[in-house]
Figure (cartoon, rainbow, N blue to C red):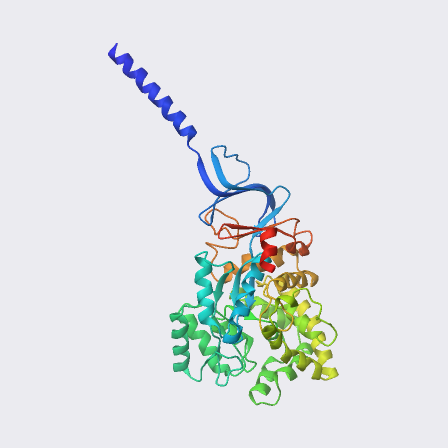
Length: 468
């Protein structure tokens, strides 16, 4: 009898444990329920639920129903399209101490446009930028994650304030030491005064330290030597075009001998573009995993300053008088340019759209970047990233590849794929929810229903308040 009762007791205890376990509910911070989840890797769209806790994606469920779970915040995403928050892979925070607050206000413009990460490609506000970066990471300020190069590396008498000027290997080593001490997220090299030799040596030295590099390329260096030195990304298409010319070597020599200028070289390079040379260049870029940042929108904007009246631009009102003042230099240069220079610039703009498409068709990885910030006239932080993706699609690039050039490729370039770039378990909950499918119309990236940054959600009303 005693034995039978023991078995009965064990059985009852077992049932009790099962019932208790059934009552245990997993609690999440946020549930995005029933949305169309867009996979940037292959363009597939599948209805599913995304569970978020502690600023990260805790679970993505497509066919399963988790009845034993609760969420403090449930977002009905039925009919909406969910994808990683956008990345603007080329912005600038700069303009000196008097424009620190004006630059700080850009942060809200990025979030209001669904841009949850920016790559700051060099400026003179590094101390402030590093403070913003840390405060945003700790949820003390609304803004995008900032990956920054800090000050640019250039030669003596550099164009941009705050640049680290190098004349020899010792200077290069000191510059890289200072960037690592900050620490910055990558190294940006500029081409206004740096020699071709020091430019290549800077890339090689950074490569030895395991640092990521991007930059302009002095025309006194060749694209082939730049790729072989170890550059990780080429900013703008001038330098790609140079590497696609049958006359690159001769033009490089003329520039080294000061016989022609950068802008003198443009029409020559364009007219000597060769499909066979270009194919070899694209293959070289692809083999070395070099990313290219086309910056088509700013190119188009600056090419047509003589024709377009920007005084009624919707985003101009968000730019402080100090920022608008920095636009004057480019505007005056456009007004004073010769008819030939204006026409050359417009032809180059058309050519660059074709070049961006050809790069994409040859599987060279592109990065969507606006080049927005002070001094870059009418290229506004936030909205300009959407305009960049629009121009890419207008050039013939698919909406999927334009989207991929934002968050997916941005994360790959900075080697941040473990945290960003896709909607997978364990990744940062930096998410944008759109009302309409961006694969059908790239302009739908601007039709934002909600933005999540570090798991914190911002409704359309919240985003409008950021703009106000």
